[in-house]
Length: 118
Image (tube, rainbow, N blue to C red):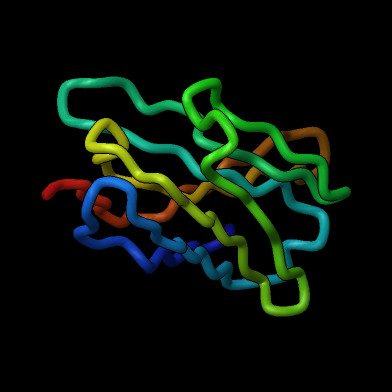
């Protein structure tokens, strides 16, 4: 089990920036880490993910505005969000995906609220 704690959410004006952080309770060296978001009344969707090898994948709506990065030494993954739009308002969740034996395991954080509004 990996416990995940997100931080960095808040209220920001359209066009502004935020950096989200997700700290894991143990080493993330072999873990694929991701950020997902869920807006009211909508399904949870992938924002960005990064493999243990550093390969990143982004949701189509990101359009170059967000960057995911990982700091393995500090068990932390970041999501830098720029040019934020009201449509980015959602709860943002951190996810860890790893393998134990033959089983793929996923753990989620509690989420951090991001509100983009003037």
